[in-house]
Image (cartoon, rainbow, N blue to C red):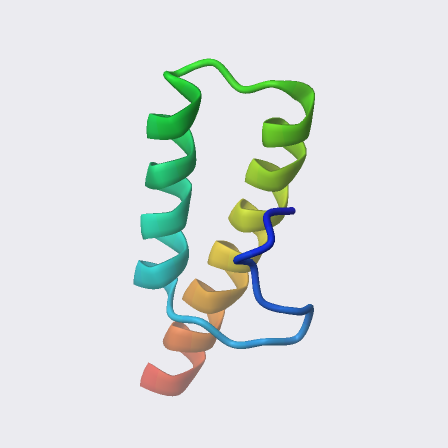
Length: 59
């Protein structure tokens, strides 16, 4: 995980996480290294949790 990533349990919006995912892909040039893939997986999990939180709040 990158140094800019918040500690586990921090709450960011899905849009913020999506922006970081897009930035990761741009930096990687479309091909992720093993370390970048691990970061990507964590970001996708965080994004999914943020989406679920938004859906829960809307309900």
